[in-house]
Length: 162
Image 1 (cartoon, one colour):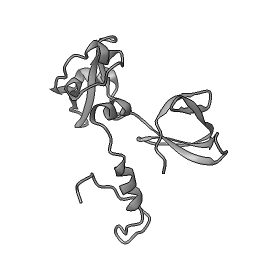
Image 2 (tube, one colour):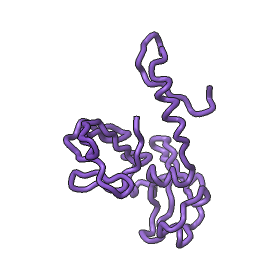
Image 3 (cartoon, one colour):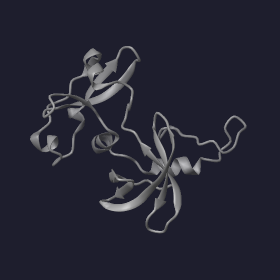
């Protein structure tokens, strides 16, 4: 499994680290976590399946519905450098909302330009809390562990849970 940060996606070409890397061949499927496409790696012509992960809480609640949520934690204002992307967002900037209808807890931030709350995208979540890439290796290493008498199911547990 390869994990890449997509920097642009337009006209059927997916850019990684600012360079064209994949050509979208076809759409395979869609789910809550993301969309899966058949892609051709431009480097060697290999046909692959690529899952493009949706931002956290994608389709969970519209930004207009934030007004009906309960504020659990009010985040600090974004510094101008953070608002313009020149500095990373920090944990103190995160607003935590509770959607009382679904009981979902939603990480958001106040965008001073749009003058409204916005949901944290996956990129912003990684920016704030980081990401331990070793979790991917752990998932791959445990792929063939027996689970309920079945082999081949991917098993995941939070890092440090055993």
